[in-house]
View 1 (cartoon, rainbow, N blue to C red):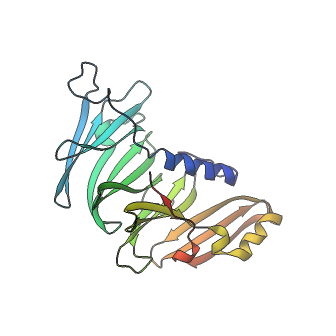
View 2 (spheres, helix red, strand yellow):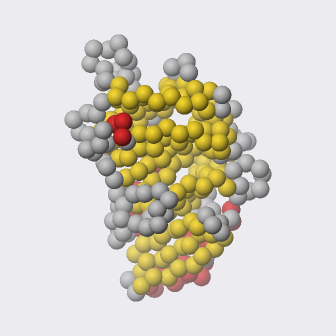
View 3 (cartoon, rainbow, N blue to C red):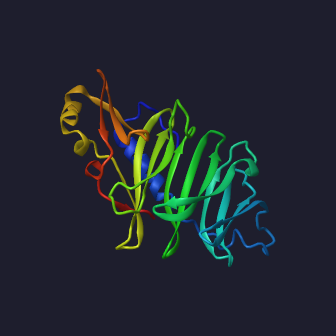
Amino acid sequence: MSRKLALPLFLLVFALCVIFASRTPQPIIEELPSDAADAPAVLLTLTEKVGGQIVTLKVYEPKDNGFTRYALFDADGVLLETDSVSLGEHEASESFALTARDDVLGFPGFELETIQGGRMTVRYFYALTEQGFVYAGEAFGHGFDDTEWGDGVWPLDLTGDGRSELVTRSTFGTGVPYVFVYRWNAAEGISQHSGIVWEKADAQLAKLSAPLGSVARAETYHAEDNTVTLTLYTEGGTREVTLPLTTDILGEWHAND
């Protein structure tokens, strides 16, 4: 997930698309059954009670390429989610954490925190909805609640419907932050995500980007006053503006796969 600050904006957009596409669960038909002779050993098992239900996380021994697979199961052993992450030189038991949360998109839920490659911390969020456990969002960066990077996650009712959205501030690689907002679409019964749209947030500043030679932009969320600072990095310096985080500066809502 590391990205250089000087990367062109279109590469950052491409990176974001790759991240969201990677949320599609991977098949584990022949890889996880414990009765198979060549099945990977389970290095870690964590169990958490969420909304009256039990969720179990299992982490399997890393492969030679440094990646390990994790899987989430309900109390009946039904697979909820599976993915592969890089552990680097860290042991699996030191790189995974499962924590129940009271409010994920307005539902009880939990977060799965991983340390990937010894540097990148990623938090995946799941909500216990009417459809069962669903993927609700993610945040990633070199550190959370840190004065330098400031990555974090905040529940916030942006729409005033009494159900919280999930606001995340994530850092690409060496310091390009982006703000994503996740919500529960009750009408369709799905989790969706959106992000700050530069043109909608500040049209005047956007018009300045072309003649200045835009290199990259950053979005930083300030939880203390619910504002977003948009910074435009250009060849001639930087320009920034701070606006309240409201739904009118969010872009199109996309379904979380």
